[in-house]
Each structure stands twice: as structure tokens, then as C-alpha cells.
Length: 284
Length: 331
Image (cartoon, rainbow over all chains, first blue to last red; front, side, top):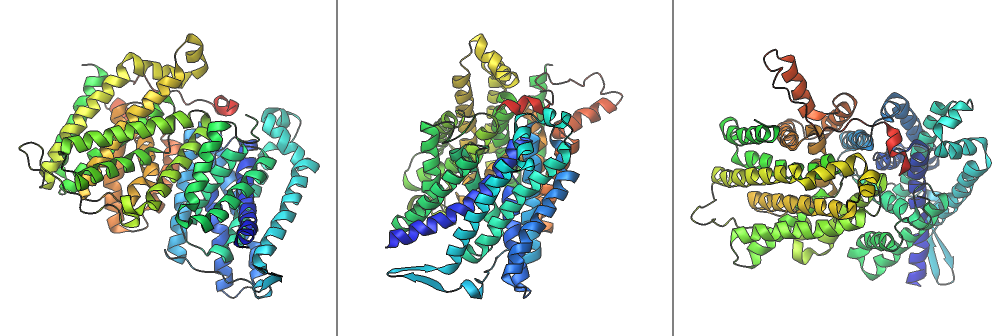
């Protein structure tokens, strides 16, 4: 029974990892831009929910608003700063986004203190679900349900809409897309905001489960990289499978060997690289 | 005087000048220790084109290797240092071997993931590493007839090692091996087509870089008497990389400038304001936007601006052109 419990836990965790990694993945796909500030958007999403609920705002309102505020901030950052450095080598992309991540982390500490805090589960979902012997917190089930709906929505957005077509075409050749009369600068901003918003949402959803602390951004960045490395960069399905895999491995290991749970994730990544250098579903 | 000798002279001048201008022997030693780590990072970044986010692994493991040797055995200091260099080299060979299976951004992400792996490894095996507390009470035994107890005596020891290693790294960089690394950096496909064993060269560069970084980590552990968990953390890798890029990747001496700047400024700022990393973050963005050749580039421009310095302004020949992004597209 404990393993079933941890398996469901792992699916929930894995779906959050998917949201985090797929944002990183589509930003890279279109912009060829390594975003080391991706964890910072996750951090901000979590802290916005924390701050709003501390001020007495309804959790649901906070959960709805936080990702959009994060996306807005990301759009601003992209159009004011990042746009100017796309033409530089990767070293400078990394330098700038590492700088941004540091600034966000320090601002979070200045605004909310170094200790962090807890976000209480919304009262409507604070109970547990009982199915015979199986007892499970409702909020975590809600997270699984919501992220599933989002995953389907995102798939439709990328595969079935005009924006998705532009993003996919842009991943192949940005120049060709702009020659076809599409304002690629606006698409870039939109995609960056979307990816960051997804990270923000993952942070917001994770806040009631794991609490908030200023260094959760760095940890999330490491996890997102592992998921992308395992799943293959630019692959939606890869991010989904790898996210779930990492989440489930981490959860199950928490029962078997609590101290080594996170160690196992990175060990697993090493094994994948050793056997499949391109990742599970990587294209290049 | 050729460029390498000039840079060595500048490095020696810095090693001599630090005691004259600084009050703390510990801080001065820290400058030179990180100068070694940054120069080793530069061998990968500037000379081979490998942006490694895993330098903290070798630094931290070097600290642990020296600490464990001195705590649990009665081996002499010199041997402890050699052991940490070997640890750094061996692990760097492994990390390098795995990471260079992927190129470009994937390579960077892999090195970062490995640095997380080793951090959790050190964190998990608390019995060996001391976990969060670190390895405490590492002794600093005498080397031959010289006691290293006093912080300035220790500085002297670090300075000698620093100059030896700096000269050795310069030799590596100017050797056929180093020249070939530049060829790999500038056009890997071509280097491979000509017939260079690109993979072996990259792994060798990793091993050398790991050895030097491991030794620097050992010296750091001896300096503070502790091998802290923070020496193997993500933040350590990040700091070493930042020093290297701030200094400039054109030549090895630039890394000494970068390390000196980073260590001294962070010491200064952190005593004034605990949230100084905010300013550092801003500085990184400024460097990327306006100072792409780092402090060394700034220095070069200053020397050129001086009327008498015009003739001695030597454009460094290994400087990579800032390549358009299209170069990185294929990864």
C-alpha cells in the first residue's frame, strides 16, 4: 500500500516536473536560448502564492494570478533585456540568466526573509480521499488532475493552433518564419512568457505541498535540466515521460532510502546518458 | 619579452603585491587559490570551448580528499595535496568522458547535473564528509622544515604553488596540445576531419583542469581548517565560472584578475550588505552586455588609451571572435 501511495505521489511530482521542464524545452526549441533563470520563475510563482495567501487572499485567486504575473514579468525581461543578447554565444546567455536568477533569489530573501514558510492547503481540498485501504490527500489529487488537463491543453496549443505551428516552424528556421510575414519578435516574447508562466504555475502548485524557501529555484533548475536531458530537448512527449519517470523514482526511493532519493535521480540520468546519449526521445 | 613571460611576470607581481596591500593573509591566500581554480576553468572554457558547470565537483572533492587524508592518516602534507590533485583528475576524467557525449547546451546541462549529483553524494554520505557541518578540524602540518601555522607563512606556500601551477598551465596552453585545443574550440568538425583525436583531447583537458581545481580545493580546506559542504555545492561551480568569465577567457592571466576581483569585491560587499549577490547578479548582466572580453579586455583598452602604452598593447592571439549565434544552432 505504501508503494501505491508513493506511486501516486510520484505521478503528482512528475507532472509538476513536466510543467517545469516543458517550459524550458519550448523556450530552447524556439529561441535556442538556455534559460538558467527558469528556476527563478518557479521560485517566484511559489512566493507569489505564499505572499497573496499570507495577505488573506483566497488560494484559488492566488493560484490563478501568480502564473500570469510571472509570465508578465518574463515578457518584460525578454523584451527589455534578453532580446538584446540572442545573437551572442551561449556563454553570455548563461551569464545573463545566472545573473537574473541570483538577483531574483536575493530579492526574494530581501522581501520575504531567508527562512521561507508554509502555504496552507485550501480548505476545500484539505481532506483526504478514502478508497478502501487507500487514503490520499485531496489536494495532491487535484494537482494531478489539473496538470493532466494542462498537459492536454498545452499539447493542443502546440499541435493544433496557429501559434503552435509558428513555434514549431520557428524551431526549424526562425528566418523563414519571419520572411513569411510573422512578427517573430512577438512570438518569441509570447513563448518565453508561456514557458516562464508554466514554471511559475509549477511553483505555485508545489507551494502547499513543499512550502517555500529561497533556494527552491536552484533545486528546480537542476531537476528541469535532468528531465530535459533524459527526455530529449525540444520533445514534448520526452518531457512528459521523463518528468513522470523522475517523479516516480524520487517518490519510491523516498520510502526505500530517504537520504539517497535525490541522488538516485542524478544517477538515473547518468545511466540514460551512458546508454542513450540523445535521451529517450531526443531529436538531436 | 613574449606574451607568456609578460603574463607570468604580472601573476608574480600580484603574488608579491597582495601582502603589501591586504591585511588578511587568509583573504590573500583565497585570491590565489581561486586564481588557480579559475585558470583551470579557463583551460576548458577559453581554450577548449567547454563551459563546465562542474568545477565545484573537483574543488569540493579536492577539499575532502586532503581533509580525509590529513585527519585519518599520518601521511605528509605534500602527499595529501598530490592525492587531492589525483582525485580531481580522476573524477574530472569520468565527468568529462560522460559529459562530452553531448555538445553545446546539453554539455552545460550535464555538467550542472553532475555537480548536483556529487553535492547530493557528499550530503548523503554524512559519515565520511560530515554532511552539512563539513569535515572539521583539518590540521595544517608543517611542510619539511617550514611550519605553516601563521596565515602569511601559509600564503607564501600557496603563492609558490600558484606560480608553479600557473607556469605549468601556461606551458600546457602554449604546447602543441594547447594549440590543438584552440583548433577544437574554433572548429571542432575541422579538427576532427584533420585527424585529431578530439575526444581524447577534451578528456585530457578535463583531467588537467580537474587536477588543478582539486589541488586548489585542498589548499582551501587547509586554509580554513574545514572541508565544508559548500565547497562542492552548485554555488561553488557558479562562482568559479563567474570569476573566469568576469576576468575574460582570452588568456590565463585574465582568470587571475577575475578571481582577485571576485574574491576581494565579494569580501568587501558581503561585510557591508549580506544581500550583495543582488549586485553581483546585476554585474554579470553588465559584463555580458558591455564587457564581453572581461576585465582583461577592459585593461587592454586602458593600456591602448595611454599614449606611452600603445606599442606594448599586445592583442592576444587566442582571442575568439564573438561568434554569431548561428554557430550554436546546430547543437
